[in-house]
Image (cartoon, rainbow, N blue to C red; front, side, top):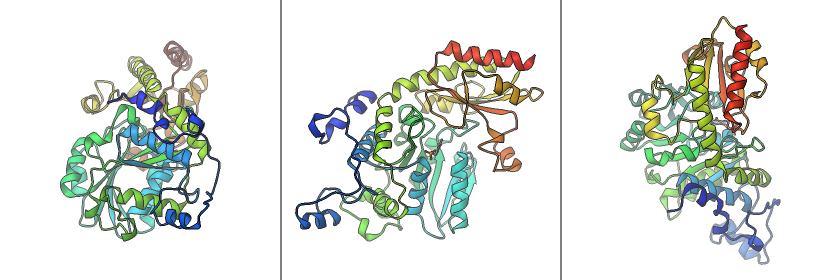
Length: 411
Ligand SMILES: *Cc1c(COP(=O)(O)O)cnc(C)c1O
């Protein structure tokens, strides 16, 4: 068994690589031509391997899909233009009007927004505290098809009861979807908790450089799709483990068109090669910064699964290689949050996460603003909460930046 990084950096060579290129080339093409019209037809009918039209298939994107499948230890993957497109297309392709799904209430804000949109279209959703598997179990109804959770939630870093929910889903025959974005396949393999499908926003840690958007859905092979009523007969091939992913790709990607561009796939594939190296550094920086803030008088609560006071400290230690590279903290509410943020010199005031650069954002006033004060309060987000996505800079520079800004704002 090769190690995580060895497998990624040699992944492209496992397929056909033109001229022995060490990187899969960027195939900037929409369509593919055939000498024999019968071959064209056979490819369309799935009887011959080949490429049809760029909305669903592209060699550069397929190379990235193979890379993602390798990272997750899954059977196969489909890539999308963004992480949101991956989640949206997955639900769009697999659920039908009147179906119900259970979701963690501690969600990436845009995923919350998407699920509200699906609810308005006729899907039923119940949000529960997924740090407790019993709350998931209590929300399940006769028409429940699927459970959706994130690994470490944003911004307060709750860790879902990933293993217990996986066991429950297996017993009840429910599809278990895990969004692995915050941990990335380097820190955590949802396969170990019996996930059926894994979602990754490739925009974040996998790409890492903040240069390209992308998303992926990976089939883990744990769910028997013969038990799932919403698969169309056309997508029922010889291997029933691939039925759902085939439907997501052939129908979801075709109907929705949320395609990943080959240039973006190339950026992400290059970034993915250093995922493990970056993650080690980012997580080490995050642990030290969270510990530093935890001891400062200007700071209230610090939310980081690597701190012993975190309610899921032990769960995170048991499940994840490291407790992540993102944390949040409450600035003492007597201090001016805007003055503090504006004193930061190295840490960038920005909304992304998973970048090589350290980024800070006042969450209540930005990404969770539209949600309103009530839902924010229910998620534990107060007005002085600042989220830090930790980058790869030198630790002394990051601590120094926090130190001078805290000293400056405390006067
Ligand atoms: C960013 C993010 C997404 C969405 O990814 P995009 O590529 O920005 O569309 C989904 N889930 C989580 C946990 C995220 O952090």
